[in-house]
Amino acid sequence: MPSDRKTAPHRMRLQRRGPSLRKPPARRAVRKRDADATRAKILEAALAEFAAQGLPDTRIEDVADRARVNRRMIYYYFGSKEGLYLAALEAVYLELIEVESEIDVEQMDPVEAIAAMVDLKIDHYQTYPRFVAFLNMENLYGARHLRKSKRLAEFKTPLTQIIGRVLERGQRQGIFRKGIDPVDLYISICALGFMYFSNRHTLGVIFGRDLMSPEALDQRKETNVDIIISYLTRGMG
Image 1 (cartoon, rainbow, N blue to C red):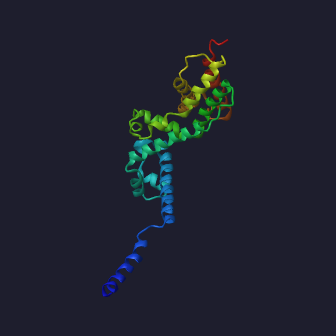
Image 2: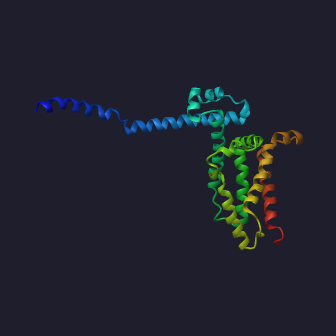
Image 3: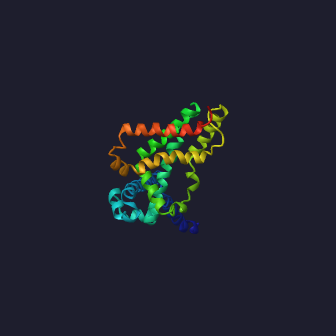
């Protein structure tokens, strides 16, 4: 009995202390949301700064000021300036994947489906000019940073698979010629739009045109569709 009286208070102290060591689930969820929000703010600021300034001239201080965070938070979440750049580069690819995944061409005839995908690329370059900026930048580095990404498998665009299905359907119907590689066709579709947007400033000055006007963009879509459809239907009568 004396022994029980001595140990009871000790057990009670342990019982009172125990629950305080655990973070309530609601608090953990709030902290995670706050962390995710902070990381997202930093990443959005980095996308703007890198696209405008390039990798060498972008300063962590400027990203921190734009995101309204302490610069130490950037190093906490991304490790270094190059780590932040890689995260931003991955983000522009993930934006592309999201846009391309939303297209639904299964109910269209093959020609309409290809035209929709060509238009989609122009719309994407117009909506996300930072994608063009990052691609120009990363190609200057020989894709050095992109090679380090652990998400490369995700960047194999779903649009190439959709193109493959549409091509097969068009070939069965006798509309498209055979022997078309979906990846090669995708690259051609990208090239027709990318060159237009990556050189819009110089081409605009040389030819005295506003290449970003709605009329010019509609014309570019029509031209690109004509080029791609003519290539696919060549020799099919």
